[in-house]
Length: 322
Image (cartoon, rainbow, N blue to C red; front, side):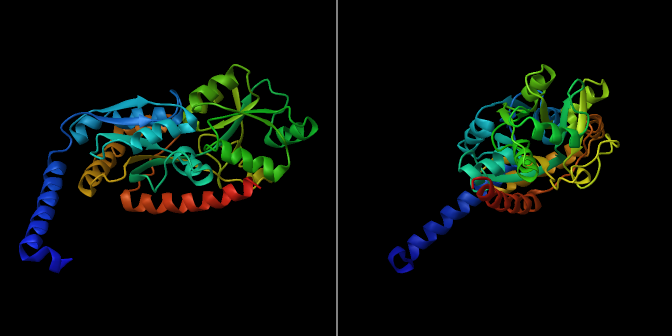
């Protein structure tokens, strides 16, 4: 190739590469010059929506531009994810990712967009899945729910946040481990699923403290189990699934993703801005009121964790498809 190009050709190629490199640096230095859009691919009122709005409430202070939340529900998160993956990788269109649409759907079903299609900017936090029911349910504990489902096969109705989502996957694990059969109704996010259980359309649901805690405190909902290795600090009386002899742990992460091809300087600038947002006292206070906390990871660490989860879910998918 060098012989074909000749000396002048090589100089031209080098100059072009330098121009592209310098242009990228200049763009990153100027970035952002207009508001940034953060797409949430699930419905309003869920833990992703609440967390994103809390964090981005101080975006102007640390990024220099506002971050506009755009809800784009549908397809279990696939529609919004695909929209961002196809966007120009200039840092102005981002995705608020989660394990359902960013890991499990692409790993198990080959749809939505995962680590091969999007670039990790940062992880904001994570929460364990919590199984809840209404106060008037015919069972009071997690063990009683399992027994009721065994006595009434196929009658228990579970409301989740989308196919293969961060709620659907642990429920599949519970059914597989306990041998129960249930009806599963998917919803586009934690908000719609919450409305379904409060309205009596489903018997049990899964989600996160940001969504359920206010209704647990008022007595409308009862938490049955936490899908973690330890009890939740906001729900100290609620056992883990492991304590109830069901070995299921499942954590929902929330993180910022960019279209593949976004330059590293822009990703680094975004990651630093989000880190400062998560360190803001007002943001920490809001997140803690939801019953959550901050678990920030930068681009490299987050990429590693996300890729490992993706490969693990490929294997889980093989098991559940048998």
